[in-house]
Image (cartoon, rainbow, N blue to C red; front, side, top):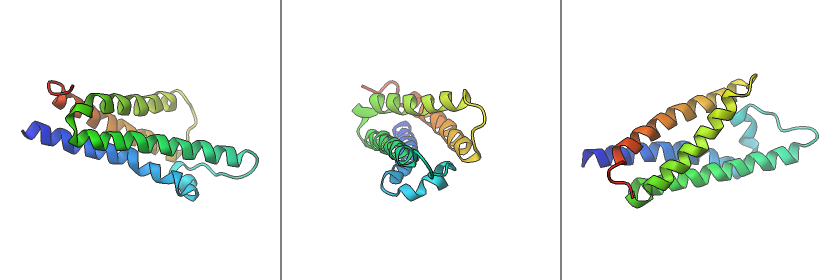
Amino acid sequence: MWLDRAATALLVIVGAVNLLPGAIAFAPSRITTAYGVPITGPGSADLTVLLRHRAVLLGLVGACLLCAAFIPSLRTTAITAGAVSMGSFLLLSLSTPGLNEATTRVARIDMAAIALLAVAAILTWPKST
């Protein structure tokens, strides 16, 4: 019983980590604050759309993780999606030199979230379907 509650709590935390940046889709003025990337000059509209789309995808992953926290049958799919999403960002960020402080902060948050997601996966392994 406590294992399920712990897994639920971890999925809620990791879901929130992914869902919160989704707000950027509706508040593009927050892009510079969140990622430390100024959105000005040529191509700024394109970059804004790409980052807002990223926010939507993060929001979807976050929503999926939050649903999986309370619907155990979704856990395997949600944990896999979260791991692929955050893991790919980490691989890309680790292979890219010269990232700014804000992007490095996002990578560190994702590292912690992946660790929590791994614990949730271990806790739910026998029960996941």
